[in-house]
Length: 247
Image (cartoon, rainbow, N blue to C red; front, side, top):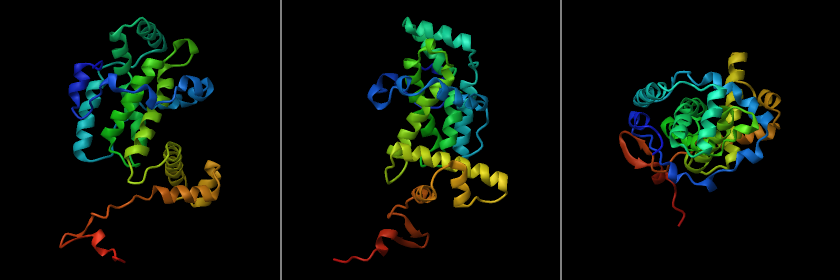
């Protein structure tokens, strides 16, 4: 494990084995994402220390313990990131560990944005950490952009891939998961601005997506219900028992 003992022990449910992070699970974003696109995501850096306020009490407690632990590592300046990146290129594992732990709060900040897409926050953080690790391994400081900016894309990809694979009973493509997340963000902002829920047309006008696409995404986001779900507390039957057998 490259993560420090302090971080590893602060939240037992978040365990990462860096050797198990498969290169083939990710697209090499250093080749597919432009510097201008990366710079647009710098807004996330200002949210790294925003407190967690959603989720079950026990989850919030566990996350707070985790945040208290990872918060002991100061955020890095651009100069410090470059110095660590140079040492990592020389094979220094301590520098790799430092760059990871200094950016674990970034993972939490990004993971919070995907809380309502089917996976618990703790799972989202763990998946995001795998993206962070890959970003550390792929980061090229000579490109001229901040590590935290570059890492954001790896973290997002790891999280959205996990949601697509594990977060729903019906699997969604990664691009659909990302589109749903963006739509929810716009919907929350419009609800705040308008003082009411926005119409489909208003969502379409704001996002630039066709009205048919907005409605399609809204249908997708409706959660499925397991047929094993009990009918009620006083009934031993489940939903599957109500389905008529045609044979």
